Image 1 (tube, helix red, strand yellow):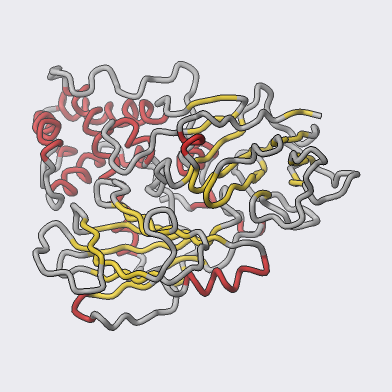
Image 2 (tube, rainbow, N blue to C red; image 1 turned 135 degrees about the vertical axis):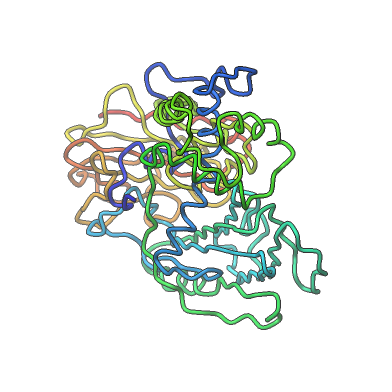
Length: 452
């Protein structure tokens, strides 16, 4: 189990939903996936790719159990990161929260407060790692609301005043994000975060607001380290998960290599079969890591392909390789700076948006710089770690354009438009929340970074 502070550069890219292809990248669908081949190695690789999202959610719930993290209660961090935290690639505009839900016994009531148009999102992820529902500014608005989260077998009547959210599985992983519009706004954002609440239906209409259970980060697993026991974890997950019609054919194929509900494939008696399972793990993991899921333009890389229910097994595995939570494209897009030359603090850069051509978003956009391979925040004299919509005092040119200055030392023309960068190698992430259609369909192009 690795800690968030130890996440590598590649892991952060995948968490952000902006993973990029390596040299010789594979197409999204492995050539043999879904084919008629009975080769055990081929089938086992398919099973690893298909099963990784389900094993991911199972892993997180087991981690929560082992660490006595309460179910059906919001946890999280009420503070923004600072460089001393050594957090990896944090968004400096958001407070994050989590919840591990279990609705097998009875549904849960979710309460969200009035946020007065403040951006927030409650992302609900089922045991197959589908982002099956959202509550928040984009999806449901910012008025106070109450929702009934129900599992697949619940047949009761929804009480008046509640809106039903149906999950195809009984366990649900939840991520919350709450916008902070500057340092002075932090108390107001914290007040919103404290009002996210969960309660069993049997207690309704009473919803008790509990203090946030503090959880600064959650760990980032590397499933390839499970080796052949990955398939035991997958078989255990299949024993409790409902079988979905669209997965029947794949599950039938997996049985040919001993992967089925309640089985222990790692203990396969056939040496050749066990050898195929062992070999499949690193081979399939490499396929996932090298999957080409990004589009590039003007020196920026972005993944437009994340949806609520991803049908392509390799794309879905890629989005969950190092944990769940990648936003669907309609909620947020993340652009990774990838110019022809590596970014380094010895240079000075500008990013200029023409008049009327700021990122087309309905919520907010922000640009952050991170230091070195670990994507750490960069200490600087003005304590600025992101620049964008909520940055006060930005100065536009006489022609209405906005030019951001990216350099190590403070610019001679002043710090209003300055984003400090590291002295050595650094990385840029441009986040777009609630992107408009012209951003999602690629019509809008982020301008190229210019080296001064």
